[in-house]
Length: 100
Image 1 (cartoon, helix red, strand yellow):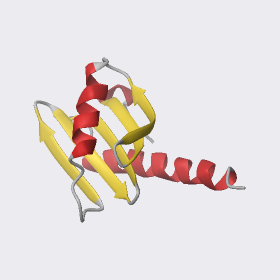
Image 2 (cartoon, one colour):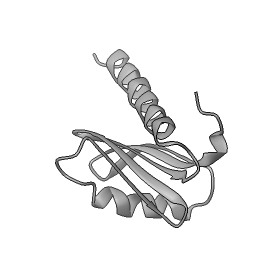
Image 3 (tube, rainbow, N blue to C red):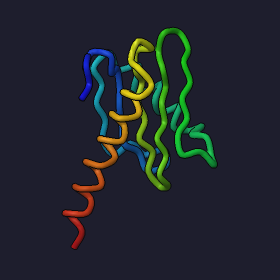
């Protein structure tokens, strides 16, 4: 469970650089930043995280999908990863139930 949802600034599910779903709690500029981050998704990684200017950028990569979020740096690493895994699992459940 997320102890403080206000620490999640942005989250998305992408296939390559195409955003399939997103949540933006702060401002429109975060969507633009996320698009730039998705363009440089690190290859050969399952997870990648980087912190700059009090924001932590976290990728959970399961080809062809990328689960990406921008968190406040105050959120613990384990909590960030648990959040992205829960997004991944929910997405997998929806994707599985909608297959014909």
